[in-house]
Length: 161
Image (cartoon, rainbow, N blue to C red; front, side):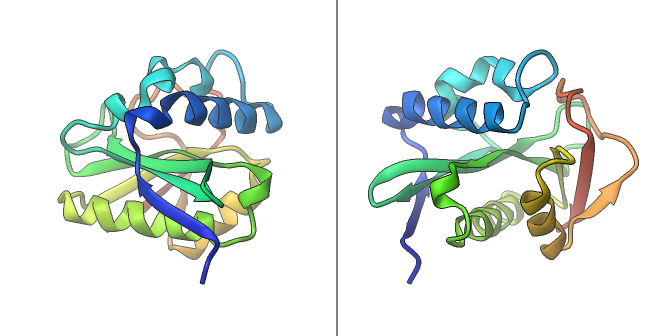
């Protein structure tokens, strides 16, 4: 049994999740203009993912929040396309199956919500994440889809659901 527990985000998670996301983004040099650390939703993730067509799940290790992942409509794309968003894990949670489980629960929720395609953006230096996405069948794209505002990302993937 995995030491990682997953659950939907709660308002009480917002401050700790913001800290975790900013820490992981800094680890990979993904800060500043064009990266998700500039997104207004970062300080209120439970609200940002509480609406229709969206969900966010946090990962807990021994009761401590160590990361998460979510999904929502892809801005500027057809309504059948969602985006896998803000999937980050602290180093202490890597290699424990948390990433795999987060992708599974997000794709399951995307299908339940009626999405037909899932898009994601990442970085070349996030090798382990890219390997995980490819194991799930995500295919690399030549250019970004939609209008996320994350022009700092340099790898794009999509999966037919």
